Image 1 (cartoon, rainbow, N blue to C red):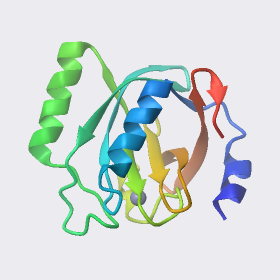
Image 2: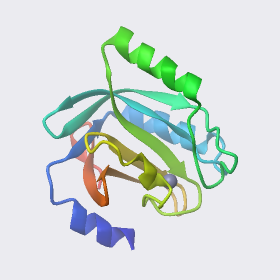
Image 3: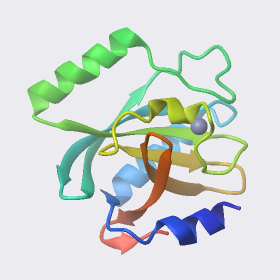
Image 4: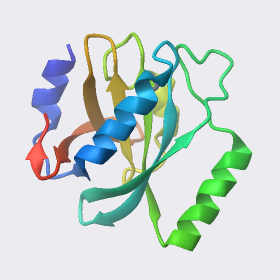
Amino acid sequence: MWQKWHQRYTQNLMCLKLSTQHYQALLEHATKDSKLECCGYLLGYSQQNQNILNSIYPMRNAHSFPQTHFAFVPQEQLQVFHHCKSQNLQIIGIYHSHPSSPPIPSKEDLRFAYFEELSFLIISLQYGINLASYRISHNHTREERIEILGNSLR
Ligand SMILES: [Zn+2]
């Protein structure tokens, strides 16, 4: 089903750019404990509709059902804000994994739909590894392109 989403929602210029090293780091985090959802922030900067990743900031999953949900720890969120300020970086997105479901935002995920500027990256481990990234605003979800070192992944 998500392939259809892919075709329908990649017809825009929005894009998340990352390096091979970032890609590997994200996979490592997602597969470290592959039964549980991993989560974290994507840091970098925005240029027009492109979010360019500079570093990933892994977070603890504090949700009481981490198999299918994720939640950030408020104290850790403050640390991210301080880190960004000192490193002159922006939060450009949020990532998390889906151990046993496709890379489609769940209803619960849509609670993060505050800022369309943020990339909402999902790493699905359901059938091998599948990444998809979205821009989510109120009741409006669009998939964006993911580029790794200038090559389009999807
Ligand atoms: Zn999710």
